[in-house]
Image (cartoon, rainbow, N blue to C red; front, side):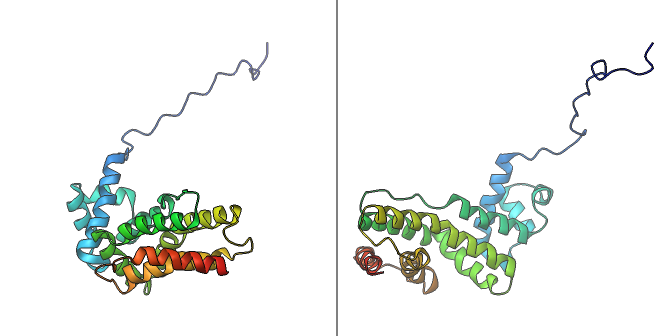
Length: 210
């Protein structure tokens, strides 16, 4: 008689069960907190923002926030970094100028939204003091548009509208810089009539000249 079982005779291991009382993070609560972070940033700014204020605005307890993030820094880093993943829709009209015009229309509305117009300058100020916030903001602003701008440039190259050797980093600066400067840095209350049309023509000409 064998003194031990073969592998074939060995009983199958029982599947592990989640520990009793393990917290399940509800997605609707997480989204409510993320929304509250944006609203709280716009209302009071990063320096005055608190976990208590976020929880109160989201209609949850502080514990719900702390289950997801260790501090207000981490919740802001997570929310801002998510912007880079979401990005902007890539225009695909078949022409360089109409692609640029559509991008500027969408970007202008996003940058001049009341919440974004309050949050971005405040986060830029905090970024000067906090390297982690600086990295997250740079990622959200740079990478969020990088794929879209690169797609516009690549498509224009394939159609022969601009040269094949265009520097994509420089092209991104040309495409994104002017509108961001006017909307976020100097915070112009209203774009002049025809500004986006003029910006579209100027950018297209600059890209063709590279």
